[in-house]
Amino acid sequence: MLTLKSALALFSILLPSSALAETVVIHAEHVLTDAASQPSGRATITVTDGRIASIADGWQDAPDGATLVELPGKTVLPGLIDLHVHLTGDPGGDFWRRAVEPDEWGVVVGIKNARLTARAGFTTVREAGSAGQTAFVLRRGTDEGIVAGPRIVAAGSPLAIVGGHGDVSGFRPKINEVLNSGFSCTGVVECTQKVRRASQNGSDVIKITATGGVLSQQGRGLEAHFTSDEMTAIADTAHTLGLKVMAHAHGARGIKAAARSGIDTIEHGTYIDEAAARAMKERGTVLVPTLMAFKGVTERLGKGIYTPVVEDKIRAVAETARVFMGKALKWGVPIAFGTDAGVFEHGRNAGEFRLMREQGMSDRQALASATTAAAKVLQMENQIGRLAPGYSADIIAVNGNPLDDITILENVDWVMARGRVIE
Image (cartoon, rainbow, N blue to C red; front, side, top):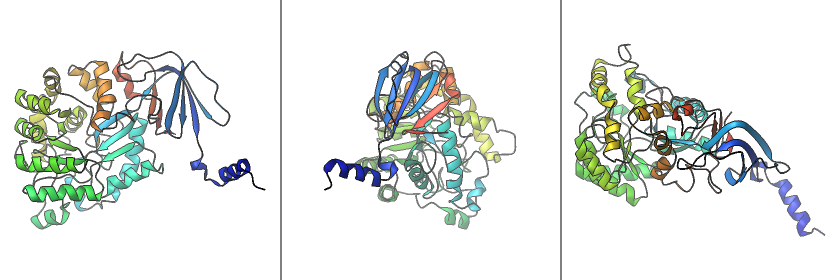
C-alpha cells in the first residue's frame, strides 16, 4: 500500500529539478543591507529558490544539499539598478544601420550586453527603447534563465512625434516611411491609441521623446516636441493601464511641460531650470540624469563617428552636461540612477557614480539612487533595492565599503541575479 510519506517521496523524484527547492548559503565578511545602513560584520545569507530566506550574524553551517559560496574579505550589498539602458544596441554614429540590419540582430547584441551589464553589478535594468520585439524577447530570455543577465523592465518602441527624436529621419522620404516603427503619433486620439498598442504588445513602461535629441539627425534644437495635451493624454492613458511613463527631455520648457502633464521620470534633463525643477518637485517627477551618456558621446567627437549635425549638438550640450544634475540636486529634485548605456559601452554603467559625485552627490546618496530610489521608481521597492528576507536574491560583492568610496562599484567581484550566479 502506498503511504502518504512514500507518495510524497515518489512525487519529489518525478518533479523536474527546477521545481525542487534550491538553497545557496553565502558567507560574507560584511553585509550592507541598504544605502541607509552601515555594513555589518561577518554574516550568512541563505537564498532559497531565488529569494533571500534569512540573514544571520556570523558564518553559519550550510544545510545538507545546499551550495556554499565563500566571500571572505568581501562586502555584499544589493544588486544595482540602471533605469536607462539600450541593451539591444552598441555605441556608434551609424544611423543608417537601421536600413541594413534586421531588428533580430538586436537580440544577438542584447545577449552579449545583458551579461556584461549583470557582471558589472546591475541586476535590474529599465530598457529605454528598442526596435520591434527585441527587448521583449531578451526580457523573456533573462526571466527564464536562458540568457545570463539582469531583470529587464522593457519599454519597446518609443512614442515620438513624426520626424522627431525617436522617429526615423535622415533618409529619403520613402525610406523613412518604410523604417517607421509605427509608434509616431499626432494629436490626443492617436497618441492614446499608441499607448494602448504598446501595452498590448508587451511594454512594461511607456517611453516618449518629449523633446529633440542629441543623436538624431534632425537639428532643430532640443526643445518640446509633443504638445501638453498630447503628453497629458499619454500619461493618463498609461496610468489607467498601470504603466509609468519615462520621457526623454533636454529643454527646460519640455521638462516643465512633461512634469505638469503627469510624466513619471525625466530622462537626461540637461537644460533644467528652476521653473522646471519646481514643477518636478510639485508632481514628484524623478530625474534620471544619464551623465555617462554625455561622457560617452564627447569621447567620440572628431573621429568621424557622428554626422556634422550631431557633432554640433554634442558640442553645444557638453558644458551644461557637467553641471545640470548638481543644480537639480540643490533645487531638491528627486534623482534616480540611469546611464543610457548603449550610447557608451555596456558594462561601464558604474562610471555614473563618479560623475554624480563630481556634481555634488554624497556616496550614500549615489548608492541610494541606484538601489532604493530606483526600486521605488519601478514600484518594486518591496522586491529589490535592499537585502532582506523575502526580497529577490540580487546580490553583489566588492572590496571595501561603497559608502566610503562609491567608485569601488566600478569593480564588482561577484554577482547573483534572482538567485543565479552570473559567471
